[in-house]
View 1 (tube, helix red, strand yellow):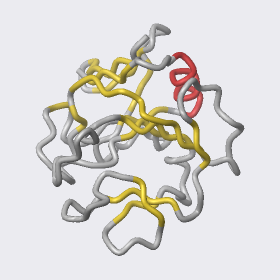
View 2 (view 1 turned 180 degrees about the vertical axis):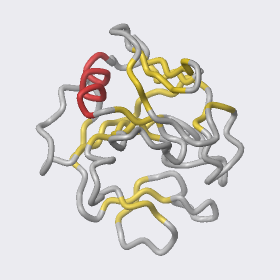
View 3 (view 1 turned 90 degrees about the vertical axis):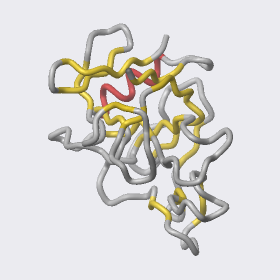
View 4 (view 1 turned 90 degrees about the horizontal axis):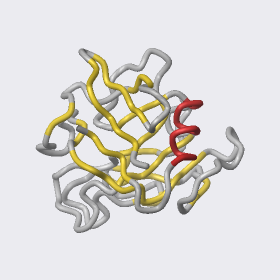
Length: 167
C-alpha cells in the first residue's frame, strides 16, 4: 500500500488508507523539482530505500525495510559538485553536508526516498526524506514531514515495493 501525499485545499495531507493526516511539505509546494534548494516537494512515486532513526530517542521502529540507527557523525551531502552528492557521508565532510544527528527531533525517524539517486544528477535535488514535522507543521526544505505517531503508523504499513506517492 502506497503512502499518498496530496493537497486538501491549502494544506498537505498524507493517507495510507487510514484517513488523511496533516503533513508538511516544502514552501514551493508539490511540483517538478527544478534544483537544489528550490523548496519544492517533488511530484512522483518514490520508493523507500531505508529507514534511519535515533536509537537514543526512539525504540526500534517496526518496519520492513533496511533499518539503521543514526550516528553522531552521520551526514548527507548536498554539494552538487561533490562526488558524494545526495549520498550519506561521515562528518566532518569536506563539502557541504546536512547533519543527520540533530538537536531538534525532525530526524529522529527518517525514511530515505529514492529521489535523484539512480542515477544521481548533480544539482537536481538531494536529501528528500519523509521525516518528523515541527509541532506547527512549518514548511520543510522539500521533504514530507509527519507527527511521530503518524510516521510510525504509516511506515509500519509499507511493504518493500511500495512508494511514497506525491501528487
